[in-house]
Image 1 (spheres, rainbow, N blue to C red):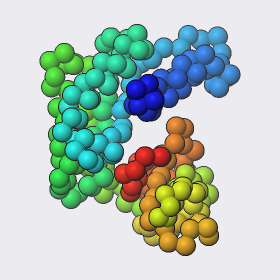
Image 2: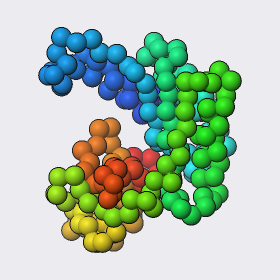
Image 3: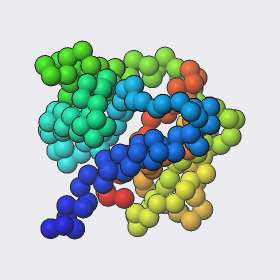
Length: 209
């Protein structure tokens, strides 16, 4: 039973550990803050691609409420402002299926009575088509792309920008089937659009890491 329990909440615990580590080492990580008191001004949530699969979207409202409450409790900030970036991968096209359910659930959080005034949902799909074009912030090749074949083993991919398309290659994978972007704890990304907005993390698979 303990082995089963250990698999749940792993990403959440890693997130909280990363925050804790940053608080303990912020003067080293950010020398300009040395001698200053660090405090949390708010929390931005921009995730939940996986919740579009296997019926998880039906539990999204309940899960999102618990996330907000748990983060505030664990960070000892019961009224901490919470901003939710509503899924926008549909761009200017209407969302369909499970994505509709997730988007509506995310947007509904700011209307929850106990969250009134300190939880805000921001629509992101309106930003996508207004900033077409791909580039990188450092003029280097895009980073943090991974490929996998039928064996489901992930290997880093070499990425090249061709127009509005990213071409991915790994010589060890003759028939790539799955792609992940920025799907690690702290991703070293550089891909942005014409408005310098960062590309969103995504995955085309639904199996466990």
